[in-house]
Image 1 (cartoon, helix red, strand yellow):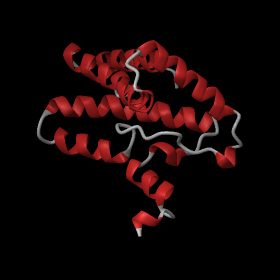
Image 2 (tube, one colour; image 1 turned 90 degrees about the vertical axis):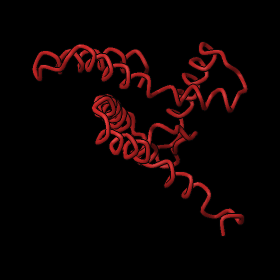
Image 3 (cartoon, rainbow, N blue to C red; image 1 turned 180 degrees about the vertical axis):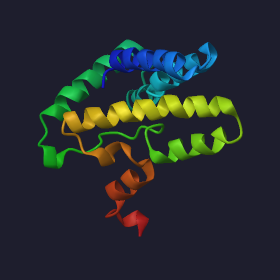
Length: 150
């Protein structure tokens, strides 16, 4: 899903939490920011892969990758890169931290909303759901036949 949609829908989600559940404005801002800024891991991947800090070129590169992925047969699609904040491992980490500090609960709400949007987008776009479920599982599946892991 494009960042503009995460931003728009995250904003609406935060407003709905204020209106219907009496969340404070600072809490809603944290939820909104965490629902959008979690995608910074895409940028980290681009910087690591291309050795380039340009946010504009990163955005354009991911748009091209998205178009390339649309052309791949559904059965052959897989996650093309590891995005560290888009897995159950990160979610569990934030969940544990949320028991220690309410700030992390708000972050957990934001990233949960982000994941929900990503899963809906994956279903709509015929992208396998396992691509964003677990980074450890993805790495293991991708590398399970490589000699150095035996």
